[in-house]
Image 1 (tube, rainbow, N blue to C red):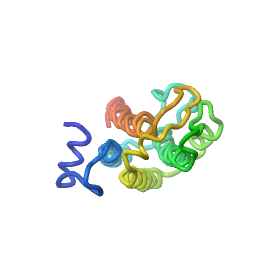
Image 2: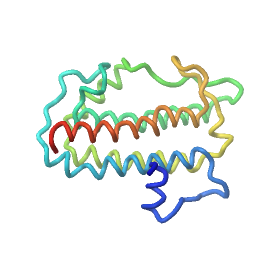
Image 3: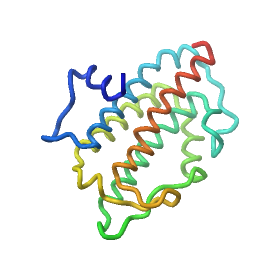
Image 4: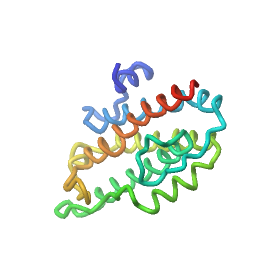
Length: 188
């Protein structure tokens, strides 16, 4: 079952705020479903604690992360990319707004380093609040908003709906799989 289908089943059907569900509305369902899947893993994460801090958590492959780094990353990622979408939406439609960051961004790395020591209850609470806020905002956007283009330093011109797909929706879904694999590897 897809994330969108699971979300619709768990919420009693599609949530519709506009007459027609655009691509961003469908992505919002997927964001909520992926966040719900991660939040459902909280008891397993807590039961397997304490989790050691990963030695490498900056620009290295995220595969070496444990739950502290993964959750800290999600908690910095969601508001960051929402803010980048908002920058594009506020910009001049005729002049694509530069947006994004490289994986080596010192603020990104610093936030993960700092927040991976925050208690799990707070990391999960932030994920719940931020994923809901991102999904709510995605549902407010029109097809025209989703088509607004920004300029990413590595990927070039991207519309807002693609920003959300690449950097939020699919990214969050990938971290559901990653967290499940981390727990399975630990026998939790």
